[in-house]
Image (tube, rainbow, N blue to C red; front, side):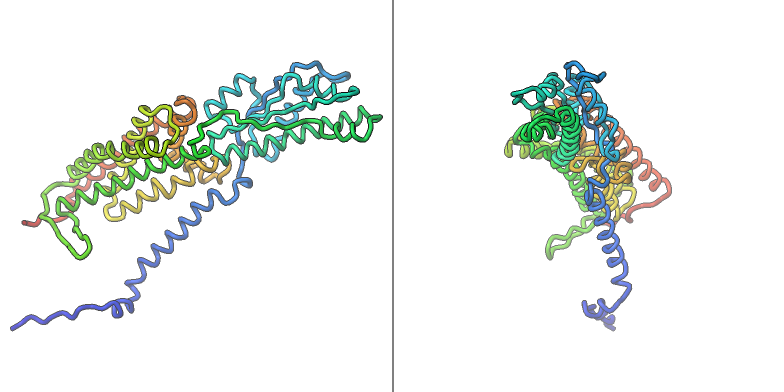
Length: 421
C-alpha cells in the first residue's frame, strides 16, 4: 500500500498563519527602531550636546600694560575668555606657544587661539594719529581631529576672538571720544581675526575623514571575514547546508567538538586576515593614493586590529550560535559607529555614547589609525592606548570563546549527531 502523499504548501496558505509573521515582524521592527535611535541619536544635534571641547589659549603678548592698567591686553582677553565658558562648550587650556604646538601635533586639542607678541602695542597705536595697522588674533585649526571637530573649535574660537575685539573696541572708543567718524568705526571693532591651519594634513586625507573610513574598513574586514570563515568551516565540516542558487548540498558531518571547531576557525582567521588586510592597505594607499607616511607600521597595526575583531566575531558566534552574527554586528558596528568619535567628536555626543566609547572597539581602533595617519604615529596621540585595547580585546575574545565552548563540551551540548557519507 502506497504511503499518503503530503500536499505541498503554498505561499497563500502560509501567509494566513499569524505565528509565521510574529517573530520576523517583531525583530525587524526592533532593529529598525534601535538603528534609528542609535545612529541618529549620536549626530542629530552636535551643538546642543557639545561640552568641554579642548581648545588651546595662547598669550604671546609681550607689550607693557596700557596706562592705568595692571595687565597688558593679551593677558586681559585670555583671562576673560578662559573665565567665560560659553555654557561649557569649550575647555580652554591656557598654554605656552610650545605647549600648544605640541598638543596640536598630538591631537590633544581641536584648535587654538593665539594672541601675538605685539598685540598690546598695536592696539595702543590705534589711538595715535595716522594708525593703519590693525592688531590680529590668530585662530588655528586641527583638521587631523576631523572636519566637524575642527570646524566646531574654529566657530567657538572665532566667536571668542570677535567678542574680545568688541570689548577692546569699547575701551578704545571711550578713550578716543574726540576721534572722527572713520576712526571711531575702526576703534569699535579693531581686531582682525585670521584663521590658519595649525597642524596640516595631506591633501589625500579626506579632510580628516580617511582615519574613520580606514578604521571602518578594518572593522568590516574582521567582521565579514570572521563570519565568512565561520560559515565556510561549518559547511565544510557538515554542520551547515551549502545552498547556491538551485543547488543544495550537505557534506558528511566530521566528528569534532566545539572547542576544536573554534580553534580551527580562529587559526584560519589569523591566516586569512593577513590577506584581507594587505589588500585593504594596497587598495587605499597603493591604488587610491591615500596619504600614509608610516606604511609598515600601519600594516602591522591594521592586521592586529582586524584580527582582534575577527577573533571577537568567532568567540561571539561560538557562544551564541545562530544569532551570533546579529550580536557581533551590534557589538562591532551598530554601537561602534556612533561612539567612535571619528566623525563627531565625543565632546559633541550624548553621554551614553561617551560611555560606550570607553570600550567599544571602533573607538579604540580609530584613535590608533588617526595617530598613525595624521599625528606622526605618536603614542600620546592615542596609539599607545589603542595597542593596549587591541591586546585586551584579543585576550578577552580568546578567554570568552574557549570558556563558552569548553562549558558546552563538558555539559554534553553537541552541535549535531555525526552522519555517515
